[in-house]
Length: 471
Picture 1 (cartoon, rainbow, N blue to C red):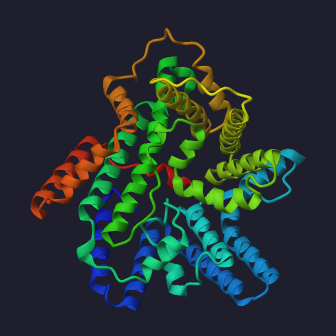
Picture 2: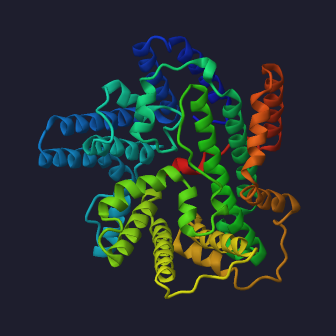
Picture 3: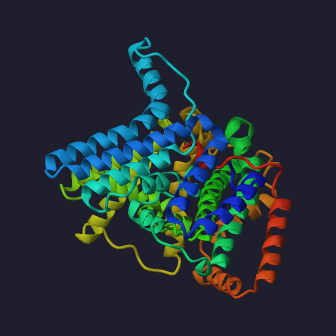
């Protein structure tokens, strides 16, 4: 079920009413919300609901075993078994075909039967959350929760199919808290939902259809200028698409009395790649840090091991996005960026490298350089093969004198407008939200209705699935 659809509007209206009517009755409310979340998931394909139930059950069994054993060795063994159990469905559906095909290519004959498995939507996200629960119970960072709370934690429909990745301590305590409808930040939720719809329905859908899909579908048939605009355009598309989804998810959860962690913070305003990852898909960045990088040893075992840990963490992060070498190389590229950043920072700290001269243009040059380093990675991320990525980048070498028909004033406005928003002072959007917060219900409803009408008018017919659904 897609957020920007009539189906979801009807679904959410019914759930919203049931949610607040049952709020005083904790047990009935909990199972109502679990059932509603399963209906939401089943709307895509009901056959995968048992998979979600199974992962939830395995996570709870793993956590129960961890909690049962007093000695560290058995706790660790139970935690490892729980993590393997909840990860197994993800490995089967997402990576079995990739591994089998690579082994077949390596050995010259298929060692494993090849099968084309449909990737269940959202499996990567709720698997990561299940891992968090089992590991955090082992670490004693979160308490063992009731089975109902765990099932709702993993299936709660606002975050179910594309995040944000919510930690157990961020959501499970809220499930047990009685919510007051009078304390709901309606204006703040509306701001997030309308902004998310605009980014997805208007910006992302337009830019991807206008230039990104045509250029990446046929790199050789487009000029250098169109290729460059497609690369910049994809940077805007993936930001508008994914941040738009999580804005809607956070806003919907807020209308139900829940607070989700922020997932994006103007990432293209970052001055280094390290800062970019503190602003982009923030819940995934923290997950990779806390459940991969630090357990690998982090920066505690010397410089060389730190660099290896960074590369390995980012390579796994790339593979999490998709079972293809383009994603692995994308992760390794960002790992190399982070390693280079560490080397430069250390060189400056010990005096081996001079500090760059300060100046009014330095932050903007840093942002420009960082943005284009990230864009280089986006080419790998978007391309369907390494050959396509090479062809896209190769078009930037020549073809600058070729005519262009895809780069229109509307496209330039959409791409550079979204990039300009990244560097607007925070106070501007805060002032708008404050004005919305003090509006009376009728004017607020009229304003939201007009905004929604404008979004549907400017958007295309139909809404494509969000990009991150495929991950």
